[in-house]
Image 1 (cartoon, rainbow, N blue to C red):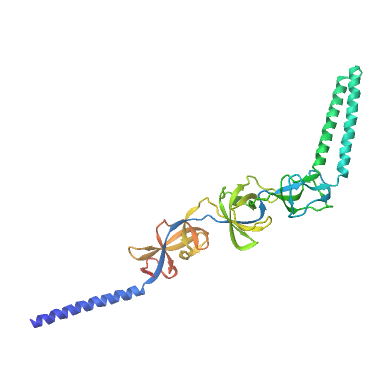
Image 2 (cartoon, rainbow, N blue to C red):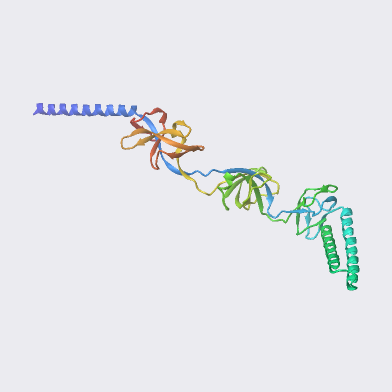
Length: 348
């Protein structure tokens, strides 16, 4: 009985020794496996930010100009001055303009005399119907010319159309100015400000009204402001070759002034969802052709697969074809494994 017990103990010891040896060998083999990290192929919105710059302006700014050209005789206001509706702000030298008005008045008087003379002759049957019609037309033309001259004379002075504050004097007293060229900029005192930026055609098609934008002003270097797209031009600006986009600044407690220089980052809301790969997973890339290692959890092996890639972003690359969503790819250790190799996952 004692002998049987010793034999059984010896056999049990041998079995335990074999199992321990197998476990040690397994642990040794596992220790020799390459450790990798994986990520799952997912879709992501790849809409790129649109960057531009512009100058802040008041939504209610009014550019005031003379209808006629000439020399500025007087500027009655200064920048920052508050003005009332109807107040005289500036006027041109009226010498030439008054002369034009007088010329049209003299022409009108002559046209009236000619009409009266032809009308009397027509009544006496000494003039024809055509003569009377010509005299009538001459009188009408002279009347219109006199009216236009008086109108231009009135618009040779700038009056404040509404109460507000002079934001900027573009022209000064004694300068020559051409018709319709802004001489003053009047602000009505509202807190609404806008930014106008010029964008290319490939950028403007990505935008729609209401898209949000982040704004950085040079006046506040550590502050971020928010704006939204309020208007999108439907035709190109021939002077700049770009499409103008207006952004409405959202309310802020900070003091804003027209003329502040701004940098704008617009985030298009039009989605462009595509599959993406971590840039660390791509190996042997050549233009749009590349390879990745796919991890098979059933066999704990990795397999090399060709893929087609698109645009490269900061930490990701667009996947055109070759994989489907949900597959696991090697992101760390891909440069040290081979096709079909058994690996082990890194567990932090």
